[in-house]
Each structure stands twice: as C-alpha cells, then as structure tokens.
Image (cartoon, rainbow, N blue to C red):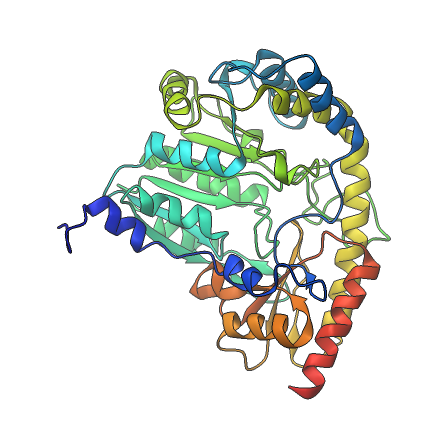
Length: 402
C-alpha cells in the first residue's frame, strides 16, 4: 500500500540500497593522495584505434538516431564475434544497448513483473540485485562459499530454483569474487530451468577475463577450458531456450566510459525488446557504435595484452596480500578483483572509509555486494604492478598501527 503520500513505485526506489562503493569513493574523489582501486575500471585509456574510429565517425557527421537494435554492421560484428567463441549466434538475436547495465535493466523489464521470485548467486554487483527490486520482484540470494577459492554449492542453487521462480541471475566470472561457473554446473542449471520454465539471465561481461593457474603457465583456463573465454550458457543453449545473455564493451576492450553493451535473446523477445529500447534510450550513439565495430575488428591483440597484464597483477596481489597478517585472499579464477577477508572486520564500509582517510587507499567494502560479503574487501587489480605495490604498502602501514 502507498504510504506517506508517495506512490508505491516511489517507495520501492526509496528502499533501494545505494551504492556503498560510490559512498566510499565520495570520501576520496578529488584527493591526489589517494590510490583508487574501488571501481571496476582499468588504469589504461581506451586504445587509440578505437578512439580514432569514433573521431572519424563524428567527423563524418554520425550524430543522428540509429536503429533501436543498433546499426547492422555492429550487430553483425557482435554475432560473428560470439559465434567464434560459442555456438552460432544470428545477428537478428543481438540488440545493442547504451551500456551493460542498461542491457540488464532492459532484459529485466522484458521478463520480470511485480511479485515475481528471482534468484541470484551472490555476493554480486549491487546493480544486478537491485534492478529486479525496482520492478517489484522478490530477490532470493544463494551465497557462494569461501574456501581456498570462492565456489558454489550447486545443489543449494537448484533447490532454490523452485517451480514458479521467474528467473535466476548468474554473473560468471563473478564480480566481486572471481568465481567462474563450471560447464557441469551450467548444464545442471540449464536442464533444471528448462524443466521448470525459469529464465536464465547470464551477465557475461567478464567472460574474456579468465586466468591460467599462474602467470608462468599457459594454455587452458583453470577449469580445463581451452578457449580464451569462460564457460558460457551460449555454448550449450538452443536459440529458443529461456536464456538472455548480457554483455558490454567495458571490460574486455578497456571502454568503461563509452557505455556500450549488448543483449542476446530468443527470437520471440526481439520485437518487444525493440519497443523497450525505444522507450528507454531510443538507441546507442552512432559514433560510439562505430568505435565498437573497431574494437571487435582489432581487439584480439588488446584482449591478449590486457589478460597478460591482469594475470601478472592478480598473481602479484594474491601473493602480497596473503603474506599480510590477518588476511585471507582466495585466488580468483576470473574477473579483475581480489575479494579478501580481513580478520576481525565486522563493518567493511567503515573500514574502507577509514582506509581512504588514514591510509590514502581506495578499496570497495564487501558489504556493498550483500550481507554475504561483509568482512571482505574488494581490490580491483586492473592496474600496473607498480601501482598495486604502492597500494599494498599503504595497507601494510595501516595494519601496523591498527
């Protein structure tokens, strides 16, 4: 029932959890003496050839509306890119969006109604959990387990996917933990969801960010997958399955500020999805889409160099943190974060604010990703080893007087 003179929708928004990552960053933004590792963002600018493609498009006057679904050359490029990584994907199933988070909102508007039951594997980037709540859904959390690595009790997830559940939200590789869902787990979830008519929402934004066991080994990823991407539901699902894959140019191509993403959906959703894009953003900017085409065409070298850099940074930070007293840092299999536990921490938000003020170190509180993350801290290692070492030194000094 509406209260305090506000409509129910306004009350839903008021009850959303604000981003604690932003709350911590607001303490330190503008301070030159703070090393920021709080956002999921690389410390490198977008490669010049991608920026040049956007400049050229602007110089050519590409400043007008485009198709709701995106310009055909970009949709075809995305489809070809995905088909090379997974099973064939037709361009007619691809919709370009104005950012990955916009893709998540659009797909949620397509399939989620007030009162629906949505299951999410957590800890999880807060946007993925809060978007269904905006639409009036109930979100049920299935937590990952912390051991030598973060892992999922697959039976616990299947038990939570009861008949009548509308959707399951899975982000793999996972932000913040670096957990990667195995092919066996994906097959079990797909079969279960087919049986009960449950939508699978796969947030695949980090699918290219997967690691070998250490920076000195090569070949297969840590679950035995010999591709240059994480296991994906797109590898095993049929086009008509109740699966929507959300992705973005932000992470793999160093394009966080460009706000360009895409969806892969069943053919039955595409007509209505076009309507939703029209009523949300109309279209992604044409010159940004031209940059996306350039990224896919010339991006293999960028992705390979980025992964070599991230692998080295991950291994270095893992070793350095685990050498510090009171810290347990599981090795992430994917994504660009090390989600570690600090002994005795019960208020990670307060601790991260203190780290900014007293140590000049900007990290993200575990509580930002749900109650399961409390006591943990997220460190984005998409950075140079030299910069990471400066951050570790800040943490060491803080711990020595804490």
